[in-house]
Amino acid sequence: VIVGAGECGGRAAFALRQAGYDGPVTLIGEEPHHPYERPPLSKAILTDDNEPSPRWMSLPEALAEQRIEIVTRTSVNAIDRVGKRVSLSNGQSLAYDKLLLATGALPRALPMAPRPSERVAYLRNFSDALRIRAHLKPDSHIAIIGGGFIGLELAASARKRGADVTLIEAQPRILMRGVPEAIAGVIAERHVSEGVQLNCGIGLAGIAEEQDGVVVTLADGRRVNADCVVVGIGASPVTGLAADAGLAIDNGIAVDRLLQTSDPNIFAAGDCCSFPLDIYGGRRVRLESWRNAQDQGPLAARNMLGAAEPISAVPWFWSDQYDLTLQVAGLADGAASVVRRDMSDGAFILFQLGGDGRLLAASGIGRENAVARDIRLAEMLIAKRAHPLPEQLAAPEVKLKALLAA
Ligand code: FAD
Image 1 (tube, rainbow, N blue to C red):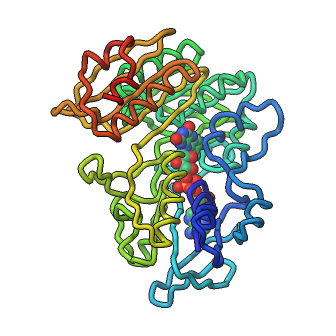
Image 2: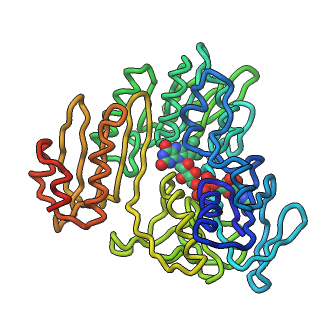
Image 3: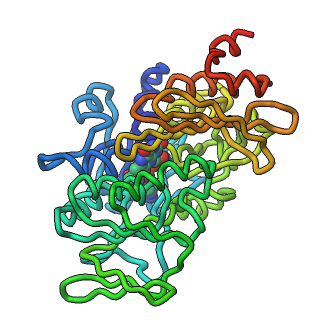
């Protein structure tokens, strides 16, 4: 039984079949849809000229062909670990041999506007995207709270549809978490040149919905009049079900290197779980990234069948804004030293090296796919625990592929 029919749960279901499991597989999701991709929700779904539909991760026919039973519009309310059963919101209960929790994450709520309303939106699922999309038109004004990935991608999409955008970020700069300042600077400059009103280092005093709009008051008294406010201030892992069942929680459902929770019959994967990463000395992390969900679903599936395969993937994330693509591989630590490699057309990569010279992370920015190949190679160097020389990393004529072979 798989709880959560998102990227991770969906991939896990197919992977069970690929690994040769022949018994029943049930995928239970509270959304009305079968699994679909979330990254387009802040991108193409908002900017498509035609009325959009979800970008399906799997079609019902593919699920049926693999004999994966999908139960939509239904949540799992409780786990009976002794009886090995889950109870569903439709009143039924279901027995499991192995259970995978792929419950994802939900947007963090802003205390002064904790719930979505007519003019205050959060973005996590397809219907959120449709509601926001309805406000994105020339002459409308969107206020975005939060200069993280979701807020910034939304700003770019809103500008593409001709809406005015004011973005408010409490931190001194956008993308404070996980993106080096020089790269955040390029992204900020681009938003400003596209006409986004960017306000960093300023808090909120209030949000008031009025009949024909919403007023955001900043801490310095300035007022921003908008047709719609979208809050993008981060996400929290969905752990309630696991916590109620007595499973260990530590910034997400705590799993070991095999994605097993504190109950050997229950696994967790994707945005909802935190796990130790061997390549970073066992550091416990939780990732909210599409590829992580895509990798961990199948890994959990194989391990539920007894493969005992540890997590080995290097964290990787991308974001598209205008024609810029940012990619980040690995995990930096605060003390890392930074080496810059300039490429053509303004693209560049920042490599972060640990005190012992080991490559820990690489972040790149450029138009379209400009940095994709080198970030992929950097990811392989990180996986190899390589210690490339800073002067070689800095020199664009030195091929990363050659460093990998060295
Ligand atoms: P989810 O996709 O959240 O799926 C979990 C599912 O479980 C949900 O459908 C939820 O309703 C369901 N569920 C929860 N509890 C229960 C329950 N008790 N019973 C039944 N069902 C339950 N990542 C990138 O790397 N690059 C990007 O550009 C990018 N863009 C993004 C844009 C947006 C707008 C969003 C929201 C995310 C984006 N991501 C991006 C992140 C990526 O989409 C997520 O990391 C990925 O979807 C996580 O997959 P998941 O299956 O773990 O969780």
